[in-house]
Image (tube, rainbow, N blue to C red; front, side):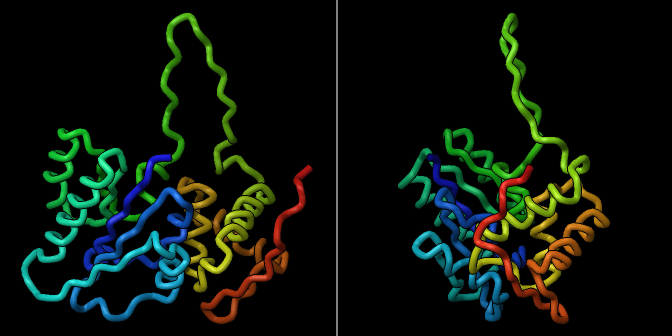
Length: 224
């Protein structure tokens, strides 16, 4: 399994959590600027869940583009140790793009994304390659998220939350964003709202103010 190294420019992109990076294929380094002294609880909890797959790098001196140079250095070091890995920079700074293009010419897989949900490995609904002439390949496909029933979408959201365990979102806004990413970015806001309310009505989540607590079962019964 190819390892995905995710280098987060937190000074540039204030990610709220990293729950989508919880499985074994990801290694995460969070780069913090001098003023990044207060981090969201959900972000800290998900970094703790990563254990030795999560790492912090803190800028120790001010300087123009200093954190960018840190990221470039660590990226080069990691690519030397694991030249077949896939390297991701989470940043809105297009200044990384020339470096990424150069790395690609050296055969190193690298990409810049503006959020965790935009990582190439999370982009869905890409067209499948055409089969060779004379061959027909039938690939089963899940129905588009917009065509699924409310029950289907609620199950997808609940199953994802069950897997997250201690790294579940603790704020309503973060949970809604997580549901949106899990069920499909093409869903409309009103559909996400229906899924959210269905989770509440089933007693699986409870909202107090802006905070969320969970009463999810260990697993869901098989759908009929």
